Length: 170
Image 1 (cartoon, rainbow, N blue to C red):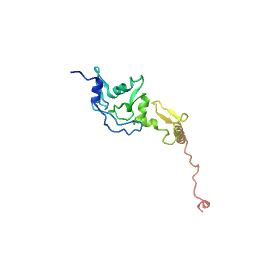
Image 2: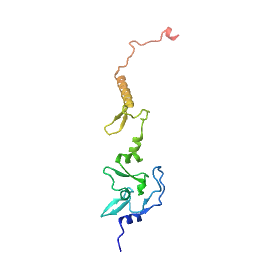
Image 3: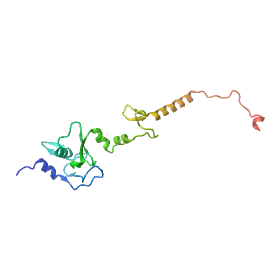
Image 4: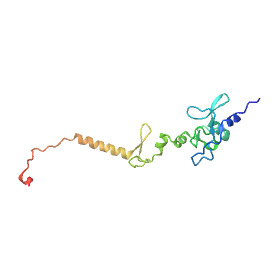
């Protein structure tokens, strides 16, 4: 009995009747991987004595080798999907910004909570890489200097106590 080819073994583990993607740019239903998955939910496939990720294998079979410096992105956002139309080779930055994690959410913010735009002139990069609003930082520093100045000023008390006079009482 002949051994099945890797492509035949791969096809046995794919369910082509998966759910339709809710993303507009993903044609057709997801092809869900029914084989083994790693701890993060990506399909894994045994090929030539080593384990490869199923979505990478599917991309390479449909489009050729993955270009250097790029990674395969699931446009449908389902890690178990191996549909070639849902996979795209993109940079790591593009892949992260397309996701729904906190990094993508922060990058999508265009204005500070006070409503100032994060543009070239109004943005300060902190040491940890986060963005700070220059207008808000300047206003905060100005308020802190005012509070410090008021704390240094002596309290002025009148020299003689003022007693109510008849003119003032009337």
